[in-house]
Length: 393
Image (cartoon, rainbow, N blue to C red; front, side, top):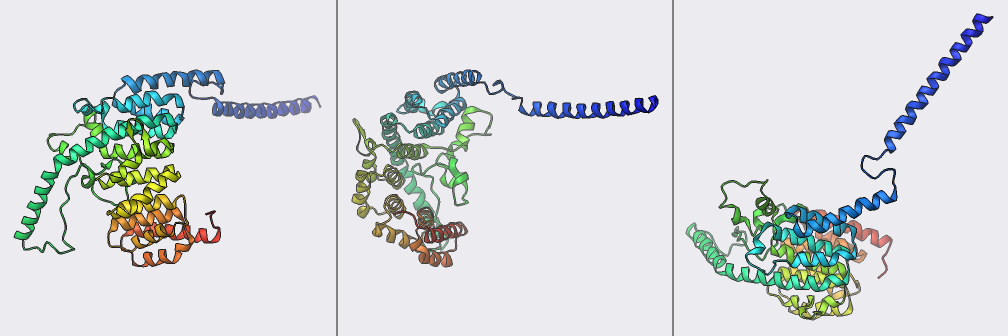
């Protein structure tokens, strides 16, 4: 009996030991899962505050004195945290050397850097940023205008040479199917947003700075000046970013301007269509009665279809009862220009108007461009949803 009792006790001890060991292993595993791998220990508030205070201080230093990509990361951090106290340092860095033709060629003043700063100011969304954004807009527009003037004669000569060469080959210059030359134009946005750009064109088609690399024997992606230029932003990209930031802030003061800086409304008469289109977008984002009335005022005189599509979309985004703009967008779904048709399809996809369902289906049936077909398909889906669950007009 003693031997049997002893054996039972041994077995019980073994079972208890195994259970305890398993429980210990589970506890250790759970402890490893919850132990943080960074310096904020156990979610303590004081450590988190200390960490981010240090990070904010470093961001201030990087924005002012850092190298090119430190400035970019600092601007992104400030924009992501959307704190109003960043407005002034961001505004100063946005305007730094922008009006100096020599210093603005330094990598730290590259348009790509300025674009990130403008984005951050728009994300913060404080009205105090409007004067700096308008000042930067005026300066940048003057840069683009000057580049545009200097390139006009060269562009005209290149077009004439291309026509002469086509005639020598016996081509009909009036043939609508003739492939026309692509001329580098500094009034177009650069390709750094090409990843989100719809048409699968070569970057060179929209790369107004492409010639800069032809004189470099070998581009070094580790060199700061080469690396920032390879991102492909130009001053038209910056103009776009400034208008987008102003639109995101949405403050009424941007419409007429803040003395001595002109307002967004004044850019509706700019001779560069891209600028007029971006201005219409910003006014639509602001959405005040004065902003929309300016679009109404300039719309009849606009000659470029792309600008008219963006203007119509800006108004309908606030008031879907504006039948005249609605009819205009439907008309643009049927024209021959691929780019304009695509923009009209994007507008209808976003507006999601059930009453346009038949016209969207008709446009889809005859659309040949695969990208625009995809957008139209999505627009049809949104219109079908709107027919079932109507929005509040």
